[in-house]
Length: 455
Ligand code: UD1
Ligand code: CA
Image (cartoon, rainbow, N blue to C red; front, top):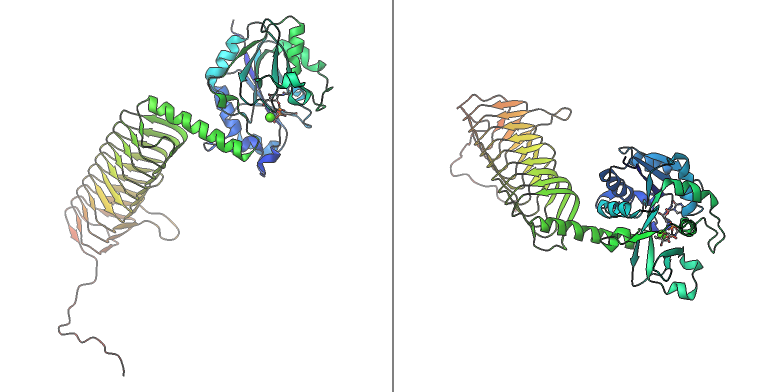
């Protein structure tokens, strides 16, 4: 029989020190709310039930987390961590185990939590760490045999207790039966007049339970966010970890400190990422991909042997193999580039398919277009896809040649192998293999006398 695993996430704190209109757990780390980091970890642990204890701005928090299946419990007054877990008891099964987590401690890993669960042999395990500066945190007291006997909070600690450097992370795995047994008996007879969750340690010890403590793999896993400085510091820790994970997979970074990853990145072999690149959302990079400096790539898929030159911005783009893009190219949602395409500087592409071998090398806008293969789209040529009210499609056949500075006024079809003369404004369909020119004829006035200034 597998025991059920629940999580109780404390998220009732206001986060006054953030100086924000937003509740603390909705502040973002790598573009994702703090609470969502914890919930994603719970999802990867396959927990049976996640109870979130909320307080301030409950509606805002619930709305932001609507994608998750959660049980919400309101803690109207913040009377302490023990009180917060106590209000969750009404939703907590009497059997199984619970992980107690925090909405503002976002980076605890599924791996560490799995170890914590396995460490709960007798009813209770906890994450602790020996640190250089334990000030402000709960201290772990142990007896002569090294067994945990209690946790004392900073404000209740004696001089000797304050010298202890092993601290309480606040993260535990506890049998639900014990939570149901102990929490109703907590008192707030302490320096802060709070119901301390930490007091269940003494109660368990009195019941003869040996509490196991394990350490997290990384210190940042148990670090909480109370102010902007801590948020920024955790962001750096997370970025360092994400970059390291990609390095382990073979990615070369010009400078691991000058890149940001705000989402999920999958990579092939021999990917090179230059400085100041930001990868957001779901990004997939093939093998032999080079991303040069300053590129921002969001929710995009990039094939093999692709070279992205500096300062490109991609958003929901799909890029085929053997493609070269940029510098300064903008691929907007539903830009799809087939293999072997060339997209040059100051080119913007939106909701368009660019066929294999086609080139759009300079200063173009392509929107709502289907461009065949081996098309040459000249410098400054654009699709006029918007009439002020509606968007219209442009279809260009294989092998067409669109001259420089052509305006293709959509809806319009250009046949395969058609040629459009430079500077044309094309408002009517063009047949396959035809040449279309739509521009004023050049006139010449010989020996032209320029105006002279009046005296
Ligand atoms: C707690 C621990 C301390 C540990 C530290 C680690 C207790 C008594 N102490 O102290 O041993 O070293 O965490 O950071 O548990 N919360 C609620 N409702 C409440 C009170 C708190 O939801 O009524 C939430 C807060 O939003 C916060 C978390 O619980 O996310 C921790 O609360 P906090 O008051 O900051 O506990 P600490 O004093 O830091
Ligand atoms: Ca705290």
